[in-house]
Length: 195
Image (cartoon, rainbow, N blue to C red; front, side):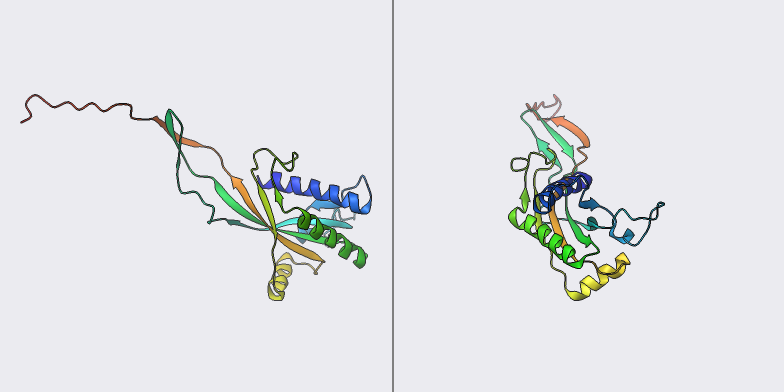
């Protein structure tokens, strides 16, 4: 569900950026490893140059929404399986434009996009993968020390950027451990030599 979440968000944001900046055949926002911004590919150019870059920077388990039950009941049986895993994804939107004012404009548009809609469901967004029940996108604030540490780990110079926390990403393999039926009747028989 992680790849599907990123694909959906990049498509939605590219559509929004096209509305704001004009239609183009080239994607303005790309999925990419922000640490590769300074790398060149074999042709001597970098596919991340002139783009807004969406990168995953952390994954954590959402323990608040964690389900403890390892079974599902239906009318006829009980199915035992591990509960789904709920994840929070921390994502970085960094703008790699040569014109600094363009970078700030693109960053503002990304923030505006999530300000206008921060909850995504299949009902409100038909393009969302049907296996994703809900995505909640919240702005995540970093202090100056955290920003410094983040960009030090990335190994690059600071770019205009913003971090968001995406909640409710569910990982569920749906691997059934075993199934059993309900107890329909109880038969108590007493041995003949029981006193």
